[in-house]
Length: 164
Image (tube, rainbow, N blue to C red; front, side, top):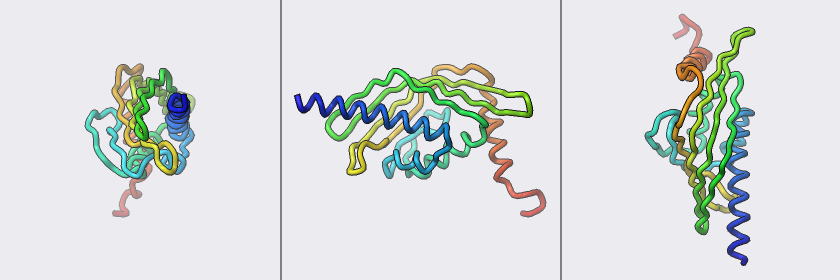
């Protein structure tokens, strides 16, 4: 019975952890998001299946570059399926990610749906995300909106013309 209780508590902690990661993204609480990640994470870049290893801080900076360019995002997570094996775990979580760019009174949106696969480690800081990959299943709206958001973010961070 103690093993079953430990597994159930771990599963609950993991569901909370991945939910907090979505909330941190949507509320732009980037330092809070970094705290949910292990020191080194294996992740894929947005809409790119290739996995790369980087620091948690580098990963947050990478996704921040795109998400900050949107006026609104909302990552809705459902259907959490968690597997716990001692101090390691994995979780598959369905996501519907709403993105909105405002232009005056007009708004352009895209919703991207799919599944996150998380790997997690239990550490002295509790459960942490050690990896996150995303498999896209669908999108509703113009997928080009994501690239326009990236260009918008680059324009914000570019030095003023004639200052190079």
